[in-house]
Image 1 (spheres, chains in turn cyan, green):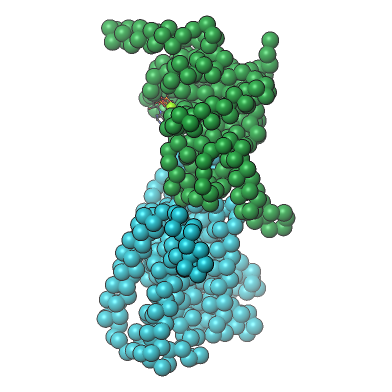
Image 2: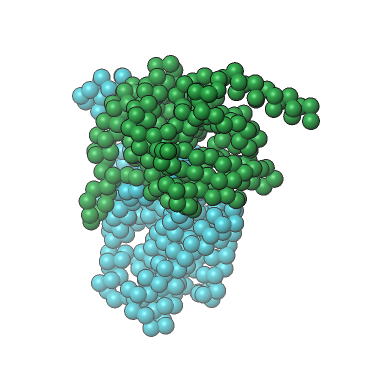
Length: 326
Length: 252
Ligand SMILES: Nc1ncnc2c1ncn2[C@@H]1O[C@H](COP(=O)(O)OP(=O)(O)OP(=O)(O)O)[C@@H](O)[C@H]1O
Ligand SMILES: [Mg+2]
């Protein structure tokens, strides 16, 4: 402690930065961007940045929800299925005569409803959320396939709305940044965030202090599903149509991995939204950078998998180092 | 006759097959300090948690200021001025000291956004700790980095700083060194001297408890087995009662 306190100046600030849970992933992100820019001149071009931003946006939005859940020691494995369900709810609601904004609201409400059901099963029936959401994963896939009858659907909406919601190249990433900013404030500067950390850090102590821990958990289930549905809507507007098998577990894993690579503890009680954003950027840069280099899809999965493992190992050890430094 | 602050009548609490409390009655007046002694597992902490609204009693009635109340939640008990230092301290290791001191009664900035007022909480936390005289380098430290005694001091400070009318202390001195224990006892005596706070303290040190409490109560296997004014009993007498019970239980 005294070392940090007395170092002062630039060195002190650098040490302070390195002790933050986001630090390692920020360093990794910068190194990766520099590497890919040298390895491939097309990396930092407008066209590629647009593609890159689209790689990044969805996992980051999903990460924001999963991070809140991880902090209170829960997880949602079904968020990628809600991602696919939401656009079909919107399309059906529009088909029944609702204007598109209301149809979007209906889709978000249904998404949130999924979170509510997950919360009820997990908290009332005391089923671990890992199991609850594993079940939901299959259930919602079936639901989406039933609603869509297995066919893709065109996304409704006028030009302005469509552009705003994702069709303009950078719209999705702008929404992702907005969600990150909002959730960062929620986590660090509201009672909700503080109580989420308290619930995951020590549920009994939080309850003894009078915090309604089930309400906190329920709220974060609803939040995560709603964000998953929202990300699904953005994607549908960007592409102009929706596939009933869009998103899926892959999107969910990328979201969780972004959070964990960013420094959120799987064991709960601590986490960072900014870290999740940078974690998402790292995954996106890897994916996009290797694609540009023409590495084939099989090798690519090996590299991504190894990168995620490496980042997680690094994080766990850095967290231990941070603990030791105090 | 002094004014009664808190009374519990024939409180029963079962956890499945375990009967933690088998009809316990207690009372404490404003300006009075009640000590609760007893074996491990006697039900002392369970009684406290019923008085804080954390557990709901299986049977029995609680009265605050003479009126029957249902302590349906911790918030409800707090609203009635009941504060507690739990045996497990109820601290969140990953949060800073000042966040812990204000847990679930955070200071917020004004409308419309109602964000956490970190600065005000930090300053008030600093003042509250200085007031007690506890050695803490910085209120920004995470509670997990503190020693056992320091953590206990934080838990006591939290209960005291909240302006409690009824203060429940579950082994507040358990992990403390002599100096820190002295500080906390000083603090408790200052609160007592104000004359308007009722204090209930669970402890295992008989002599110390008799010294600072006005009245003591002995709890064994979910019942109150002995009650006396502190001045009218002694550690030796209390120990003798505990031994007698123990021998009787072994024989029977
Ligand atoms: N949440 C719970 N669920 C089940 N049983 C419990 C629970 N809390 C307490 N008990 C049981 O109730 C009994 C009384 O426990 P309690 O914690 O009140 O004892 P205590 O007098 O505070 O003991 P100590 O001096 O060790 O702190 C014990 O047998 C304990 O196992
Ligand atoms: Mg106890």
